[in-house]
Each structure stands twice: as structure tokens, then as C-alpha cells.
Image (cartoon, rainbow over all chains, first blue to last red; front, side):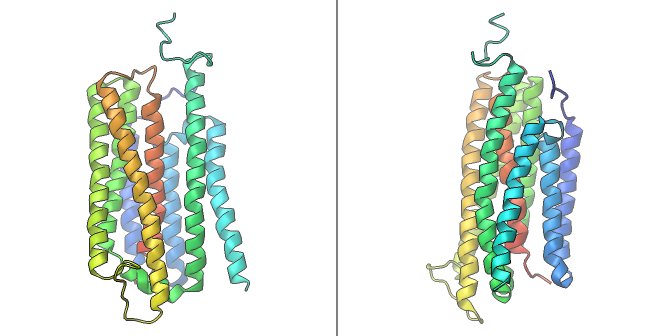
Length: 92
Length: 214
């Protein structure tokens, strides 16, 4: 009986509060003139938020390794798709 | 013995194996969903790199207060869904039905706010093909941004709609006592789908609404 240790509700509430704080941070940072750094910062915050939801709300922290691999493959696929597409455009 | 595992399909050895199989299935589906939205993100990235000024100008025309509120609504609905799954694990039926109903309500609130936003976009002539008008430079490229804006947010809203339908169904099943701490796979699996719809929005929000606000 693996995977039967349940997450305490306090953890979900804490994740929720951190997600809202990060939302405020990403909106706030967008109004600062950071030049090229604005977009990477927004995306880094999104990745952090996604990681929190996946690890805690979606229980990947305690999930079967196979599930974690599948979850990562999806995002890995996007990274390849977007970066290779951009190489083409940027190299023209 | 038969009673102990009443919800166990005959091809599985034990409830744990059945649960892992269901989770594997939903995660595979979620991976295809991630790739589906990935194509949209790739198309967005290519056009934004080609027309950075037009995308910056277009993004400033989007409604940040409403979208920011909507992000908070969806993040909160993710919390209520997580608490619903927790209630299912403990076999707390009233709490389960309550959290699921609240999640449905928040999902409906998200769609309602989105509808108001679309209406304002229409009134501001931002809808391509439906009276689109932009007086500044690169009007065609600004229109291209709004094609992407409506397609990406529209497909996402469709996912929210499907999620609301699933969660409402689960809530009715829960009120009829269909789940127990030994079997609540539909709650678990629907929760995973809902969290993913939330995650996708967490990426859609900055790339459409926060391009160039400073």
C-alpha cells in the first residue's frame, strides 16, 4: 500500500496563498521596466506556480515514478517544440 | 471478501493497482493536453518574435483587471478541488459534495468573467472579423495577436466548461454515495484534469496580458 500518505489540508491552503502571492508578483513585475527580463521573469513565476500545483495539489511529490516521468515528458515536449520552432525563425 | 473489493474490476489484483492504472491513464491524457496547448504556445512564440512591437501594443489593449481576477478565481477553484479530493479520501460525503459544488461555482464565475471580458473586447473593436479596428501602426499584426488571444482563451474556456460538467457529474454521484475511502477514482481523476486546466491558464495569463505593461 504505497502512496497512501495523505496531504494535510493546511498544505493546500499554503500552496494557494503562495500561488496568489506569485500572481501579485508576476502582475507587479510586469509594470516595472526590466527590459528583456520582464518576460523570462513572468515565465519563471509561471513555472514555479505550475511546479507547486503539480507537486502538491496533483500529488506528484508522492506519486509513482512512472506518473512523474509522463508529467515531465509533456513539458519537455513543449520545450523542444517551442525552442526548435524559434531557432528556425531567429536564424532567418 | 467479494464485498471488501466491490469496486474492483476483475482485471486488477488489488485496489491500489486499479488506482495506479487510472492515474496512469489520466496522466497520459494530460500529457497530450499539454502538447495540444504546446502547439498554440509555439505558434504564439513564433509570431511574437516576428512582431514584438505589435504584440506589445496589442497586449496593452487586453483587460488586465478582469483577467487578474479570473486567475485568482481559478487558483482558488484549484484549492477547493484539492480539498474535495481530501474529503473523498476521508470519506466525508457532505464536505465532498460541498467542495465540489464550490468548485463548480468558481468555474462558472471564471466563465462569466470571461464572457464580460469578451463583450468589452467586442465593444472596443478588438474581435477579428467582427468589427476589428485598430488605428495605430501594424494593425494587421495587432489583429493577428487577437486571433491568437481569442483562440487560446477560447480553447481554454472550452476546457473549463468540460471540467465544470465533469465536476458537476461527480458531485451528483457523490451525493448518491457512489464513493468511499476505498474507491474515489473519479474524484481523483477529475481533480487532476481541473488542476491541469488551472496550470495552463497560469501560462496563458502572462503571455497574453502581461507582454508590455511597463
